[in-house]
Image 1 (cartoon, rainbow, N blue to C red):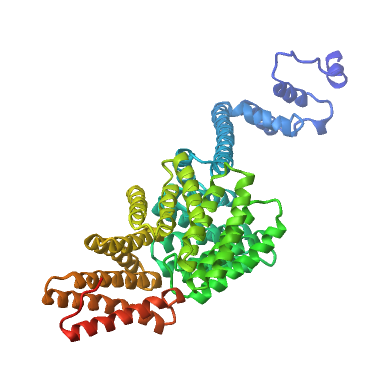
Image 2: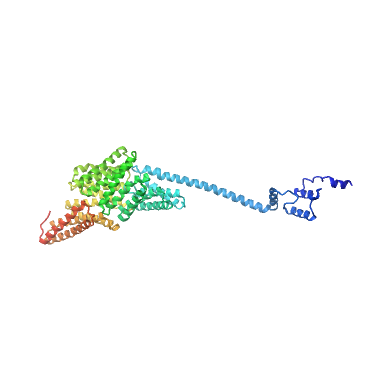
Length: 587
C-alpha cells in the first residue's frame, strides 16, 4: 500500500545529470501523475524515443526555435561543418577581394591624382618657360602611356572620360599646336586631338547640356583647323573652324568661358578663309569681317578680365591679323596702325615678365609683321629695320634657350624674311639673309614629323629669287623659283582650292619669265634671243592666266592686282619683240 500511495502522490526523484535532457524529459512525461499530460499510448512513447534516437526534436520538450536549430545541427554535424568551412573560406576570399579592390581603387585614384597634377600643374608651368622642350617631351611620353592604359578601363565612368579628354587635348597642344612651343609633331597632335574630340562627343551625346565637354570639343576643332590649314587641307580646316564657331556661339549667351574663347574662333576661321600669309580659300572680305569680329569680342573679354595677361596677348594677335588684311588690300597706312597696336601690347606684356617665352614669341611676331608692312606697303626700309632686328633678337633668345623646340626654330627662320626685305637696297646682303633663313627652315623641317610648310619659307625663296636676279645669278634665281613651285604644288595637291598657293604659282611663273627676259637681252644671236622671248612669254602667260582666273572668281586681292597688270604688260612686250624678229637688247 505504501508503494501504491507513493506512486500516486509522490513525484519521482530527479534523474542523474548524466542522462541526456531529451531522454530525461521523455521519462518524466511517461511518469507524470496527470493522465492528460502523459503519453496517450505506447505508440506515442515509441515515436518520441525514435525521434530521440535519430536526433529530431521530441514531443516531451517545449518546442522553441533555438531547440530546433540545436537538434538540426546535432544530426547534421558533418555537412554543416563542411558548409561552415566553405562559408569561412568564401567570406575570407570576399573580404580579401573587397580589401584588395579598395586598395586598388585607392591606388588607381592616387595615380589619377598624380597624373592629373602632372598634366596640369607641370604643363602650366613649362608652357611659359624657355628651354623646357625636353621636359615637354617627357610629359608627352609619360602622359600618352598613362592615357592609353586608362582609356581601356574607363567603361561608363564619365569622370574618367572627362579627365582623359582634357589630358589628350593638352598633350595635343604640346605635340604640335602652331603658335606655341611644341615638338613639331603635327601627325601626333592630330591623332591626340581626334581622340579627345571623340571622348567629348561621347559625353555630349549622353548629356547635350554638358557645356564643359562642348568647350573642349571647340578647342579640339580649333587645333585641328590650324594644323590642317598649315598642311594644306583647307576644306577640312574650314569645317573644323566652323564647328568651333558654332559650338561657342551656341554656348556664349550663357557660358562666360565660351565668350572668352569666341574671339579665337573668329580668328582661326579668318586664317583659312582669306589671310594671304597662310594657305587660304581666297575669301578676303570674309576674312577681314571675321578678324574685325575677333578684335571687337576680344576687347570685351579683356575688359571682363583686367588682371589676366593672356587676353591682351590674344588682342595683340587679333590686331596683327587686321593689319595683315589691310596690307593685302593695299591700305598701308591702316595696316601699319593696326600692326603697331599689336606690337605695343606685346612689348608692354614682355616688359612685365621678361622671361615669359610666349610673350617673347608674340612680341617677335608683331615686330616682324610690322617691319614687313613698312617695306612692302610703304617702301620704308629705314623705319622697318629696328623692328626687324628686334624680332630676330627675340627669336634667337627663344631658340637658343631650347635648341629642341621646332616651333622656335621655325619662328627664327621666319624672322629672316623681314630682315631680307629691309635690305632691298643692299643686293649683296639680301640673298645671304634669305639663304640663312632657308637653311634654318631646312634643318628644322628635317626633324619635323608633319607636312606643314610655313608661309615664310616660301616667301624667303621668292625674295631670294628676286635678289639673285638683281645680281645677275639667273640659274640660281630659277632654281629658287622652282623651289617655290614645288611648295605650291604640294599645297595644291592637298587642296586644289588653296587660293594662296594658286596666286603664289603666278608669282613664281612671272619670276621665271623675268629671268628669260633678262637672258634674251644677253643672248649672243638673234635665234637665241627669240627663243628666250618665247620662253619668257610662255611663263608670263601662265602667270597672267592664274591672276585673271582669280580676278574673275573675285579672289584676286588688291595686293596681287599689280601682278596681273605686270604680266599683261610683259606679254605685250614679248609679242612686240617676237613680231620684230630682231629684239633689242635689254638690261
